[in-house]
Image 1 (cartoon, rainbow, N blue to C red):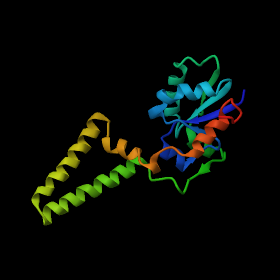
Image 2: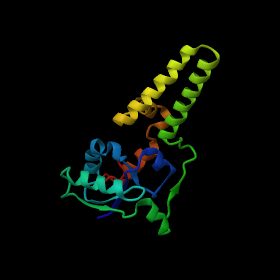
Image 3: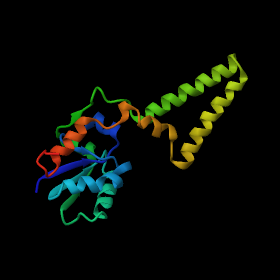
Image 4: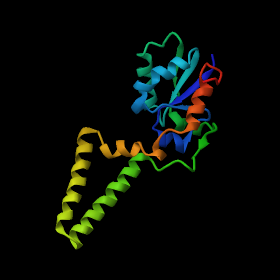
Length: 180
């Protein structure tokens, strides 16, 4: 039974560095994506990995509840990618084409919007201060509910979507011998 490493970190974290030939299925969308992926990886030993091991354990619990337990052996790489690197194992490092992490993109955009509205309110027309208040209200709502509409919208931008290389890795890891 050959091994497949499923990295459950978010796309931007995975793009920065990951174990070679690992497949990225972010924990945030794991429950929706995992059944199809696990179905393709029949008779493979699945090792879940994240940065430190916590999200990988959550993914293992979700996978165990999906009903593929007869076809798979699940494991968590204890200590995650941090332990992997400490053990001197090879990693695929920073994709220079990888965008900034999505949350940093959101923070930069929100910061720029607040500064722009504040300056416009101070020097052009005080009505622009309403824009800064609206951005602040959106930020408060995102913190209170855990849903950030701006992050969702920015996640759909071309540079934040999954890449073709990840699809090829998934195909190579499947039990179809690379024929997808």
